[in-house]
Every structure is written in structure tokens, then in C-alpha cells.
Image 1 (tube, rainbow, N blue to C red):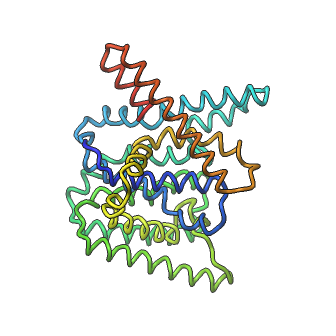
Image 2: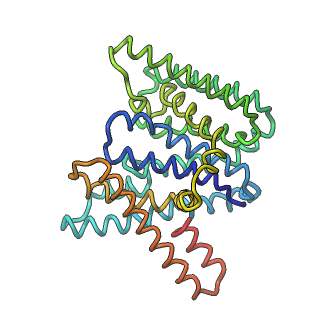
Image 3: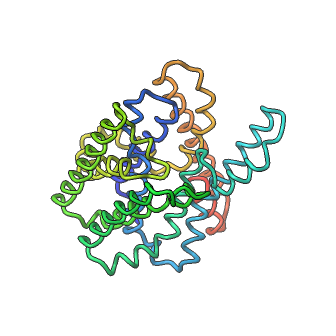
Length: 329
């Protein structure tokens, strides 16, 4: 698949927002960037619809996604827990290690669990989408979002492990929309974005009336409820609508930087995790952000250069592909 700069630039925006919230910024910034994870999932749907991976046998496809999503996390966790053991001078609790490696945790790697589960369902979703029209998809998605919202307000949504299971449903719907995004007209994109924005504003008024204050959409993120997804999708569709203008307005060097970050999101995300703790005592949020982002980017760049040099000495093409898939992306 040929990469599109505009998609990588949107990934850069999404990753920048994800890293931003982890350095504990002011509430305004927490809310403003609260579309980042849905944007990543939406773009994964766009990429899947453009890729040749959807033509693979299901087993081969799952193995490919496992190598790209899970193996990098496992390698990172190996380094992370080794560093933890040296610093703390004791081994981490076994239950913590197991929960992190299985991705069944609310820690930073939960997002990889969502991406991987969405990826496992992607071929099934794509085949189903071939049987329905775009209008039916949008109508069905809106209905399912509403049904999910109703379900979340019942006692049935409070079973053990509900967060791990229910987290996936809204993201699967967002992925489905992403698969058809390139086929949507500009008029339809603006219409959907407007509907999502109005839905968000209705929730703002409702929660303000109930609680007497503005409630961040973050409060309805685990699992993603309509207050969260309506704001996120409004932002995502607007960014998609203006993606080419955003790309073209950037100076060449800035665009190249954003594209580089957007094409290395996995490892930049992973390497930023330990630095969030390192910089937590720095008072200035901008300094925390730049340090975390800069250090993660620097390590990813060094890692990429080393992998490229190492693979030059390897003759087996399948080994080269595996190494680059895991350690570059």
C-alpha cells in the first residue's frame, strides 16, 4: 500500500494528543485532544480499506497483525520490567506482569489491546460492509451507538470485566466507518460532523443542568459512551475534511517531520511511557511534554537506524521483514 502523507499527518496529530494527556496538562487541553484514540481507530479503517492485507488468508492476516501490534509491546515490556527490577531492586508482582503481557490492564498498553481486537475483526467487518450501502452503514452505526448508550445506563453494563469487553464495541463501529470514509462525499462528511457536534452540545447542556458544571468527555471514555464518541467523531470528521489543506499548508520540513512521526507511532508511543514518570516532578507542562515527546522520538530514531544497519547484514528476506515489522513498524 502506498502511504498518503495526509493520513500520517493525522496520525501525528492523534499521537501528539495521546502523549499530551499523559503529562497531565490543564483541563482545557485534556478536553481539546479527546479525539485522539478514535482518530487512530478511524484511520486504521481507512488504511485497511486501502491495503492488500485484506486479501490475505485470515490466519496469515492475524499473524501479521500480531507481529505488528503485540510483539513490539512484548519486547518493550521486557526492557521495561528489566529496568524496573534494577531500579526498584525487586521483581514486579507476577499479576502485574501477566496483566501487562496479556494487555488486560488499564495501564498504557490498553490501547494496543483495542487496536489488536479491532484488527482481528477487520476482515469480517470489511466483508459485511461490502453487502451494505454507505447510507445503511451510517444509519446502522448511529442506531448501534444509541443502543450502546442505552445499555450503558442499565445495571446490565456493570458485570465483572465489562470495561474490557464493552470498550471494543464503539471502536469497532468507528473502524467500520473508517473503512468507508474515503467513499464519503464532502457534503456527507460535513453533515455527519454537524450531527455529532450537535449531539455533543446536547450532552454538554444535559450534564451542566444535572451537575452545574462542564463535564469533560474523558469521564465517559471507559467504555466510550455517546458523550465521548460524539465529540471525538465531530473532530475526526473535521480533521479528515481539512486533511489536504492541513498537509499543504505545512512547510516541507515540518510536513516531513509529521509524516515520520505518523509512520512510527507504535514505538514513539511505547518509548514515551517510562518518561512520563521521569518528568512528573517538572512543574512546567510544556517542558514535560517536549521532554517526553523528544526523548521517545530520539530513541525511536536511534532504534530505526540500528535496525536498518543490522538488517543490511542479514540475507534472509523473511527475517528482515520480521525484524523491521516488529522494531520499525
